[in-house]
Image (cartoon, rainbow, N blue to C red; front, side, top):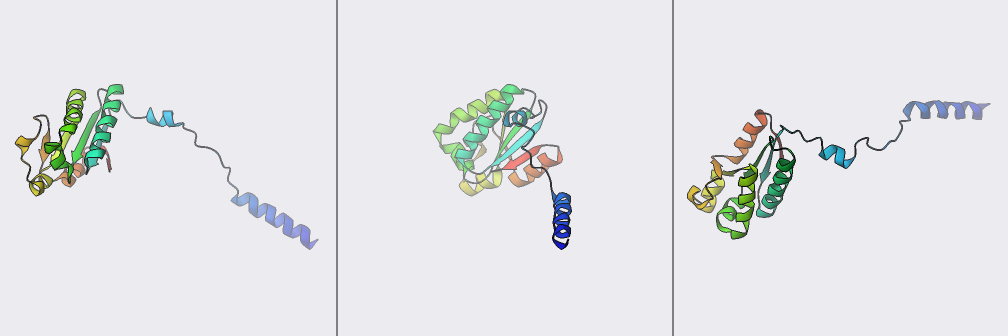
Length: 146
């Protein structure tokens, strides 16, 4: 009798704490396709490799959603790389063609001795990249930092 009582107690306790395990209901393509056509997105980027990846992401998203706003905010060493690394010119041109805004932190520019005139004319600058990202967030942008 005692064993039956314990077994029933375990079954009741187990059923109370049991939760069904199921796979996520959305597929990867469902999630990728949920990016809004008129959404606002920004990426904070510290180096050239991430800059290249951000440009390609912007290109892909803007190809599918031309009305979307997409910005790349550059801080740290990429501020210098953008002015001196010739291999990044094609990525700047892709950004300009696709309507992806590139904004460079002037604090990083000053640290690395770069002037606005060293950049492609389509590149914008801001006094503080972090403050600019906060402003984007306040204006409804979804942001990530790499």
